[in-house]
Image (cartoon, rainbow, N blue to C red; front, side, top):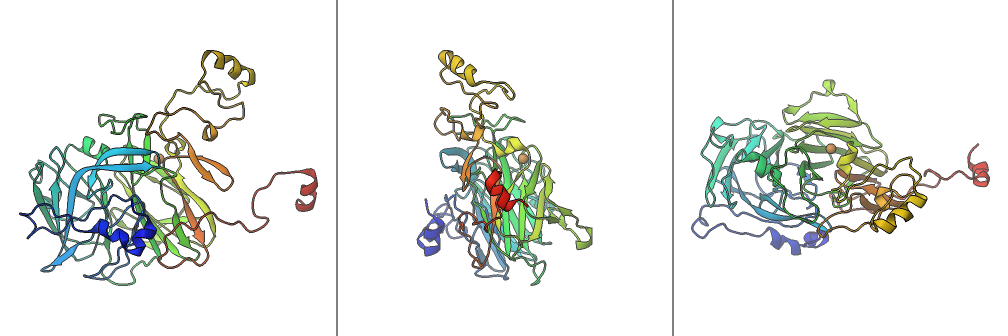
Length: 434
Ligand SMILES: [Cu+2]
């Protein structure tokens, strides 16, 4: 595994080195870079083609390309991957170029893109370019607009990028299985003209959900509604990197939902505007202020705000069971039941039994035996104790004076004196509460 620091020092560059698909195809196929790192990679500045300000993929990376006779050529490889969901849990997923989700594709309005897709899965696949205006035969619906890509074969998609905006890619072949296994990625098209809707930080991620039985590694792909891993870019808190932001930055966050339910995404401390969807940008006069935006199944939303207020601001799905990890046990509802003596008595019969609710224990601090490769239901430590979160939760860390391209975790916020909620006590309160 390569840390971001190693990556910045250049030693991680080898990860992005060539991994040619076959000797026969080497002459014609572009490189298929691969990365298995779960760290958020620094933005990939374009080294040729039209200039743009690159995005930052949470716990992910952007796919390098080559220019060839006026075409921007990318190479996606659909393949089985191992993804660390958070420290202590790995999942056997399907993805692209070493990861699930696959790398973010970035290009510029007007670019002609040629995307090679090599299928190393045990079954056929296709790639659909969600939201993208393109010729019908490039739309990637297996059986409808093209033959499926059989295992071992490489297909080519070619189209010109008509409009800038926020898109995704995913299979349209054995869809329920392939998306339940994690096959998806982001496709960002930057504006051709300079200075269009400029931002200082531009973060992107995809929401995906899995049903992985506690102690196992592979998602149950027949599940239709009952998922237990709620992830951003196939990571759950505390495995999701924070979003470091310099005070005063204009911040854009783009997210897409490829789970099977909606997610009301909520940011603390700020009012934001929804500035775009996968359908395009919203005219400034048509935007309204929000603190939560619901993202329906198959939708994308883009939010923007001015980061004026320093702090560690929670950023999460507002469905409380989506900020939890798998339940590895059955827990009765004991809220309101006095249990102090009850627990001792039950423990004589059931040694592992634990009380919830009215004994003072909270789910985040419970210690219970877990199968291997299983995360606690609620976890994460903050500067004031247990955070009691999992799943779709992370932190927007707004700080004074971060470097322009510095995306390293700045640590916990140091609150100015007198600005933290405090315990009421007769003596100290006399001094502070007037
Ligand atoms: Cu949710």
